[in-house]
Image 1 (cartoon, helix red, strand yellow):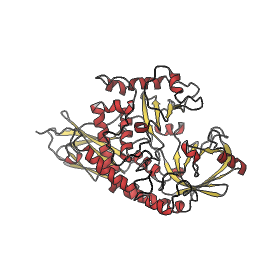
Image 2 (cartoon, one colour):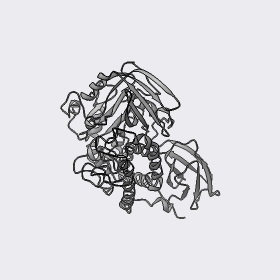
Image 3 (tube, rainbow, N blue to C red):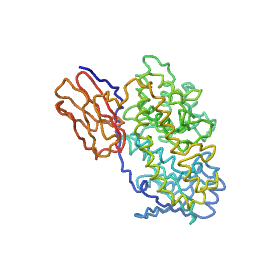
Image 4 (tube, one colour):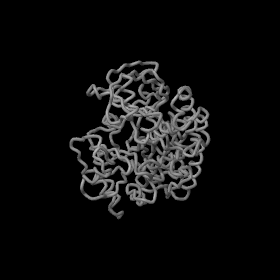
Length: 509
């Protein structure tokens, strides 16, 4: 009998917690309103002095049409780095700056991002939807209208803070070290001294590897151990040793998401904008991308990110976390499989364009009324709408949709012939899954004869958690599986007998 083989790609379950996507603070179906009031001289001080290192007292009202809550004595400051000089400022609200321990709807910080360099103002939100749909640990995002002292400051992206509360949503143990890594955090080995990595920027107030939790202990020993392991020679022992300290799949999936979305202001190209969490439950570091507005065709470097090869994304300078992992053939194939799944299911034009249209419709009234949207680059309302479908200026040479269409074509061509396993369309796994993507009901159909009379099918999440085990009599050629309790994401159906293991992917919306 002919045998069908397929590579198994999944990671260990890490105690993932799931939250409702329609949480009122991050409701994706509506644009809420945030009102901030503070003494006029305090707000003028924030703007004129670019205050981003301390909070000033304000009152906040959150109103989404269903609830209207008032919080006294919240903290307000500017947020960002290069965006501090923008006319349309971004803001951070601290709910516990002056009331210790206070949370609102389970969070202590609110990030309001002005998206001043994106004529559509949806790119960052869209990236985090792709991130979530790919099965990564969700960073919630929504849109709000912002008023300060009665003045409409415009449309903002409301992004969940990556902090202890975020860790608590996703991990069984949120007590590990969380490092915020910014340029030039290339993870190159600089010796065994922890102090060296704390002082890369030669600034006592800033760190490229900035510890966000457990600051009193200020322990960088595990981070140095990770960097040491990443910079070791790629020999026969390297794959097993690196997986003892690093969740390799989280890195490869993040890399695939960045490449599929054209996110270049990341670790892999720009040694920037990522978090590392030392997960106490697994003893391994997890990788999380952040600050993702330079995506879907935005460019500042004169590169064509839509056509850039997925096999040669890295710059000509050290990036050991990427270059060393991709030098391992099995890891490289895992990365390519993630990229293939993303391209065919999640960022495929037929799949993602309707969502883009929904976002445009949702925010159009707030964007049209936004008086600050035009101040930095002169984007008028025509640029807002045209930014979805055509070039606007030098740093947005692609509209979002043309970028994704071009990226899809080029990625599929680049992947052709480099995957070491057959395309899923050929059903080399011995299974046919449809519809794919699926909403609530998945049909699993056998496409080959099997010797055993009975075997087992298992469904795994993209984080490796076993979601369902399905006993199967081989006389039955087809079964229908209800998925109404499954969160959105990528899943794998694994068929296992005594002689073979095969797998097929599907996407649950």
